Image (cartoon, rainbow, N blue to C red; front, top):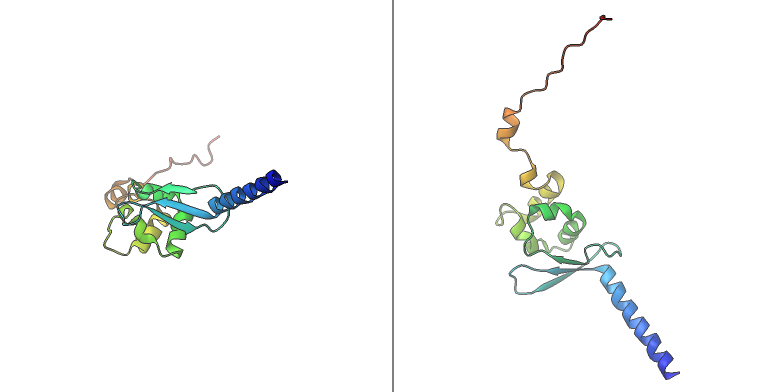
Length: 129
C-alpha cells in the first residue's frame, strides 16, 4: 500500500512537470543579469519549449513568430535586442517589421529593385494557324 501511494505521488509530480513544460517557453538569454527567462505560451505544445536566443539573428526571429509575438505581449522584447538592425530604436516595431517582411537579408534592396528589368512577354501570334 505504501509503495502504491509513492507511485501515485510520483506520477502526479511528473505529470505536473510535463504540463509545466508544455505551457512555458524556457529561454536562454544573452548577456543579461539573468541566465534564463520564462514566458507562458499561448497554448500547450512541445514546440519551442527551450530556446537559446544568444546567437539568434533576424532570420531566427522570422522562423519563430509565435514566440516573438508572445514576447511582445509579455513586454520582454529586450531579450531580442541583438537581433534587430537598430538596438537603440523601437525594438517592438522592428520585430514586427521582421515578422511581416522577413529579415533584412531577405528583403530586396532599393538598388536591386531599381535595376530589375521589366519582364516582356513575346508577342502573341494572333490569327496564325
